[in-house]
Figure 1 (tube, helix red, strand yellow):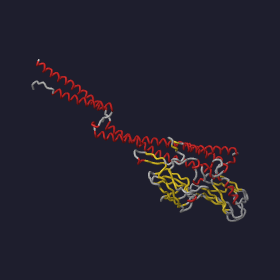
Figure 2 (cartoon, one colour; figure 1 turned 180 degrees about the horizontal axis):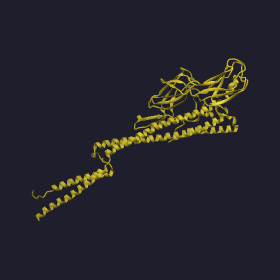
Figure 3 (cartoon, one colour; figure 1 turned 45 degrees about the vertical axis):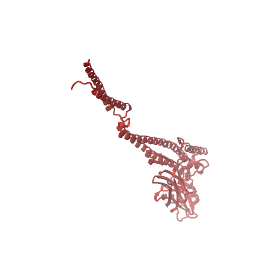
Length: 476
């Protein structure tokens, strides 16, 4: 080919250099931003996938924040209930120590009552003061709402959770089998009395006590002697004609009574029942109740019902103490603490936290509430009632149940959701990284390649310019 003066080579080299420079700029941008896709033209389909994954990650992060706050809120409630539980244990110890007051002076008993008053006051104060971010947790403000609870029907109703339905739910309960206390009977023939001093070991749900009954005691005196130990045994004696009936104050299969005649026991005349015989252990019967079509065996008169996202408990009142008795109430679709555990509103769950103030703890078939143990109450230490210890133990059970419900929701709902969301976040982040993040090893190698090409192109451009200059020199 002959020598010609043209800029074809120069233009080709300039195009190559421009493309290489543009590629180098793109690679530098990827290295500086950390992303392979910095504008739509880099990878249109990849950009769509990257933005979609980014939106999902944002939603997961928001859900994680929600769950972590929920976990913290429930931890505050559990911490407060832990302290309440500790105070109840102290009260139980004081009540048990005061039940057998033979070795206690009046001043010691008064001091025990003062400590109980202080503990009960603190329990109510904790219930009213426990809050999270300005929201009261244990004063009943976070309870699930109910209506239509009649007097003496459903006592101590507690609703632990509800589903997300916007409709109210009517709960109907019908008694199939009534709860009974544990019972036993001593029979003394009409007009007869004990011929000798008699010692009887009476055992009830609370414990065993040895009772001494004097010579010449009739039915009334026998019952009175047994009732002096009610605070220790939980057994109450009543007179019915010639019979001295022993019965537990509570009802259900956990209640039991027995009596063993240790000595004496004879009566003054030979007649039916000439001896106070032993009473074999007998147990009470739990109530069986149909709740919205489901048969439920209670714990005494305490009924626990769970179905279709609802969980609740109540005690049968005196209007529901016989077979076929029936009543109902309404669970409102409002109240409680509702948490969104996932990325959309289909993952909402609601937990109810009822008040743990002293007036609400206890109840059921325990015979009273914790507030009744305060000075001047119907179950203070001056009354020496066998129900005092039962009430405290029922209160302990109530708090343990509340802690268990909160802890169960915290572990199996909130913390499980946190673990699941963290796993999803890791997977989504990995997927987005594959699409969008710069592979620094590949990009660095590409940058080196483009630098070599750019330098080579510039050098060749110089040679092309030299060739044109040599041709022009011929004209000289």
